[in-house]
Length: 199
Image (cartoon, rainbow, N blue to C red; front, top):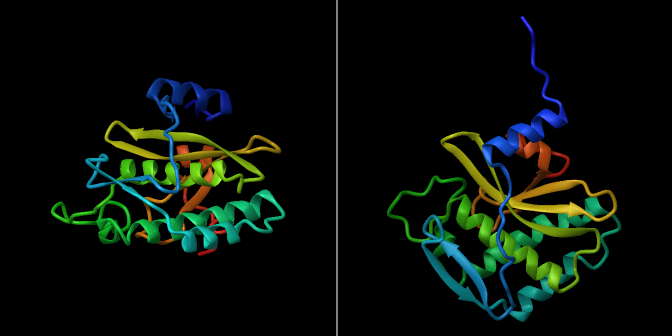
């Protein structure tokens, strides 16, 4: 029996067929005084939140001395957590649980669509403030492992070698560090690396 090997070229072809990849959409405009926060699944509800100067100072401190792209990715994870905690002070997203574990009637629940939008907004704040020295924000990405297994997250790319990574906050509860994974591994739904996600 002949075995089909999943080469990079074959993987690219499969992803084109299934529609996986970067979501083609304009980058949203965000500002510290008006950050869109999505919740209640599918961005059903959106509130605009102002990030406090105190919280923003804590976020900026995370990026004061990253000496490598790896260190910056660790800082990104923590920044997402801090910003999630901030918006939870003004919206019901504090009710969110990991994945889609919240009950349907829980106000403030978030699916991967909500999480990807919010993560993108947070990352754009970092990029606009020039806090990212080693990465650029590409936008939201989607994968289809099966026809009913659709998942969104946000992709960033390393400026030095163009390696692509996914920032995925859906798997954890509100205010916990987002997961980061190589984009190619994320597309194949492989386990998150403990090296990139120490806690």
